[in-house]
Image (cartoon, rainbow over all chains, first blue to last red; front, side, top):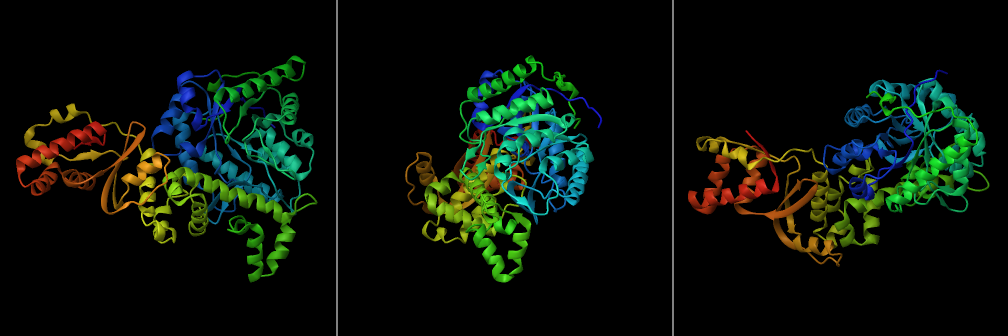
Length: 295
Length: 264
C-alpha cells in the first residue's frame, strides 16, 4: 500500500444552519468545518453565499449522504457532476460519503443502509468508487455507517470489507468512532477489533458524535454530547492511527456553538495528550494546499 | 427491503402484505436478514422504517410550516403518510422531497375541509424555490437613465431568477399572518388572487398584485417589451397619461424590490 500526502486540518465542527449567524459574526476559533454536500447543491441563495464566506476563513470538507455507492441502481453521474461543480467552487480539503446504499429503483430512502459484505459487493462498490473518483478527479473518503441490521450472506466483517474497498479502489477512509461504537453494540462485535482491522494509511478523518440509547439498541441520532466510552475509543484510535483530522457532528438538539467547539477542543486535548505520552506520531500537520482533492 | 422500509404501517405489516401475495417472501426475508436474541430481523428493519418516515416528516414540516399549522400535527402526519406512498422521494436531496405536495393536496381529503390548503402549499413551495434560486445582481436605476427615450417601448426587462407569479384561488393574507403569529388559522377568503414571490438579498418576500402591476409581471415573465405592457396599461387605466404614471410607479417599486436584473 502506497503512502500519500494527507492534509491535517486539526479539530473541526459540522457547519449547521443554527450557527450561521454566530460563525459569521464571531469567526470562532475552530480549525475547520465540514458541510453536508447536498445542502449546498442548489442554484444560489443564502446557503451558498454563507459557504463561500466560511470557506474564505476556514478549510472546508464536503461530506455527502446521497452518493449511494453500494446501490444496484446505476451511479447517479449527474449528482457526481454537480458535486464536482461545488468542489470547484469551494475547493474542499477532500470529499467524503458513506459505505452504504441510500436508494433503489430510482427512489431515495434518505438513509444509510448497510451492504452485504461479500466479494461480489466488494467488486461492485470498488468499481463505483473508482468511477466516482475519475469523475471528481480526486480520491474520496468512505465513512463506516452506524447500522442496525446485517445480512446472513455476508462473508466478512464490516471493517474487513471497508479496508478491502479502500485498497481495491484506492480510496480513503473516514472513520466514525461513534459509529464503530454504535454498530459494535447493535451487532455484538468488539469495537477494538474494528479499529485494529482498519489500515492506518487510509484513514484521513475521524468523526465524533453522540447517540441515543434505546435499551436494546443504540441509535446514531447526533443529538447528544459524546459519551465517555466513545471518547475512550477515540483515544485508542489516536494511538493506532496517529493525529487525524477530527470533526464533531451534531444534527439535532443543536446546542450553542461554543459547546460544540468545546468538544472539538476536548478531542484536541485527548489527541495531544496521547501523543505526549509517547504514542505513535505518524501524522504531522500538512498545509491545506496539499489537499488530496484536486477538483 | 425498500418495500418493508416504506410500508406505511411498518415493516411487519409490509412483510405480511408481501407474503399475502407470495409466501416465498417469508423464506427470503428469513434467509437474508439476520436477527439475534436482542433484536429480531424484523425489529431491525423496523428501525430503518421508522427513521425513513420521521426523517421525511420532519423535513416536510420545515418546508410547509403553514400547512402544518393549519392541518395540525395529526392530520399533517396522515397527509405525509399518504403523500409518501404516492410520491416516494426520487431526488438526491431532501430539499425536493415535497415538490409534489401542492398538487397532491388538491385531490386529498384534507382539501375538502380546508380547501385553501393546496394554495397555501403552493405559496410555501414558491417561497422555498425562491430561497435558493440562482443569484443575480439587481438592476441599478442608473442603467435605465442611460437608455434614450425613443428606445423605451422596445426594451425588455430581465426578471430575477427568484421571481414567481402565482395564480391562486384564495386570498391567503389573513391565514398567512395568523400562521406567522402562531395563532390558530381560520379560513381564507375564496376568489382569484395573484401573488408575486421574490428574493431580495437573502430574504424571500411575497405580496398580492393586481391591475397594472399584474399585467406588467405577466409581460415581464413572458419576455414582452415595455411597450406591450404600456399598451395594456393604457387600456386598464383608460388613458396613456394615467397609464404612464402607473407603469412608472410599478417600475420604481420593482427596482426597489430588486426583481429586475437586466435590460435588453
